[in-house]
Image (cartoon, rainbow, N blue to C red; front, top):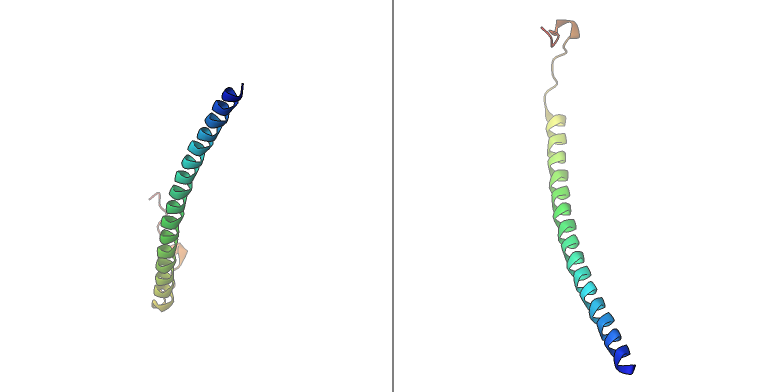
Length: 74
């Protein structure tokens, strides 16, 4: 009986160790994903700032009248 309990305990501990190993791998992968996404966000923020500066520094466009525009179906 005691030997059977030890085997069950050993099996449960082994199963938990395996689950922890998978969880650690998943956490590492998620951390890498979050890091890459943060790099992309930082790059996009820089690009948005550059576009905003371009718009602010662009010469004003001449006023257009919508009546002069050709409708898209012509």
